[in-house]
Image (cartoon, rainbow, N blue to C red; front, side, top):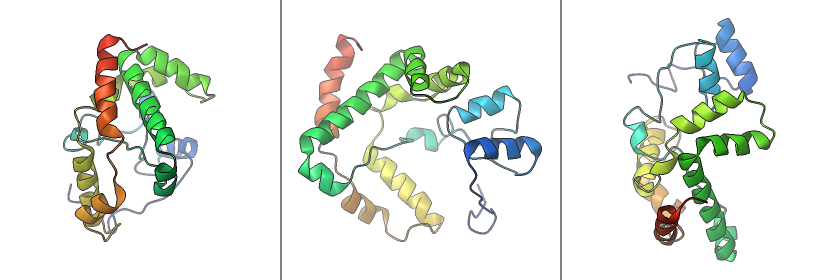
Length: 185
């Protein structure tokens, strides 16, 4: 985009509520938000959306999130690791199929968000597309962005080789493929 994040941006960390307040009051120029914060800001007509990684290319072509576990723990507990990945992917499928159910579950955890903003966020996020994305390409894409921003020194190949393990994803994709065709409950 022609901006050097190290030279052209002065980064400041604020709790989400404070960051949203500062943006609304003009105390900061930008806010990096995660759902349902952007939905709330849009509803209040605060700011202007510059980038939505769920729909804007090239970011929308990659996972927005990855499942990460401590390598030693995952190696010692492969059954637990597989169960955790399965539960997360099933939850993703449920959110894609029934955003209302996902929003109720999110709010039941005690998060203090407007229920409509939570529902809107779950409708907008590409939960059902995890099968379409390639996790290795996602790591490569973001590793390149981080290297360009001088936040990491390792090459994408080194990051992928040293920090990824796809053993749990491939069999679960097949298992959940049959699960999703039988119904999502």
